[in-house]
Length: 92
Image (cartoon, rainbow, N blue to C red):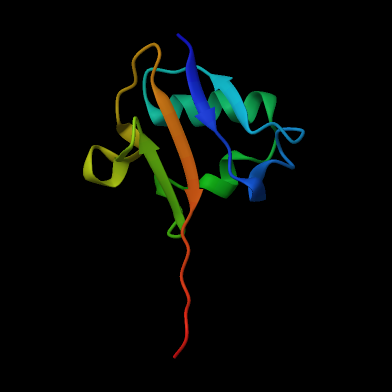
């Protein structure tokens, strides 16, 4: 099963600079484990235990997985996963 994963600039050091990598898995948990097997260190930057890190957003086909089943969200062949760091700030 081929899943396209879009990698943010801050995590591209783990993917050799690649903006997009391919992964596989029936759930996001399995996908992240698959990515870790080829891009050592990336998984701990995305998940903390059994949930997404607080300042990381993950989208499955443009839908926030926090409103689905989190990292237990099911995947199908051809899905697109986008990993984005949360952005905060502004003037106070």
